[in-house]
Length: 184
Image (cartoon, rainbow, N blue to C red; front, side, top):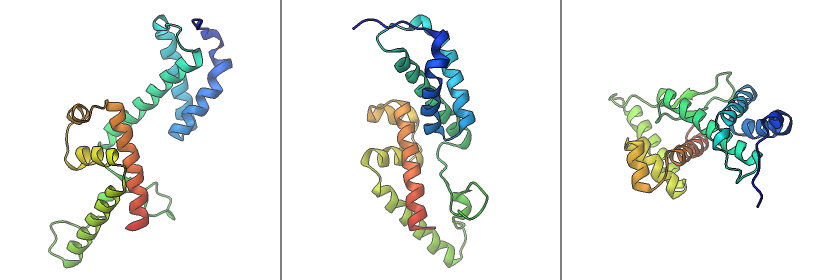
């Protein structure tokens, strides 16, 4: 296989549309996707000296873009709080969604309705967690419910932090859908 050469002068013309479509499919925001593509091109220029030519230019740029997308989700997850689950339980409203915690009854209340509501919600959450694929369920439980450190989970399960956050994101998305169907 012949080694590929970089031609940064052609990147925008040859790859911008492809990279943009790739990014927008993953972040669902055109402006953010444009920013990520620009960051990809900059990172490509900065690391061009490390390009070995084993992969095609586009493949190499996609690998950089994948890391940019992962970094974006890591950044927003650390800002929001890694264990919070956002759900949209009022689709008729203009709001983007409300925090699950706002809908949970006060756990310290002596009101019988709140106790019953918390028990029902707890059962609904456990039921939804049990429907997740085993690895997602395990990672979500370890990180979100048990509060284990990312490094400890990765070491115990033999995964890297990127895989962990992808699994948590997928678990949250699945839980949101399950709770919307079965609870709210």
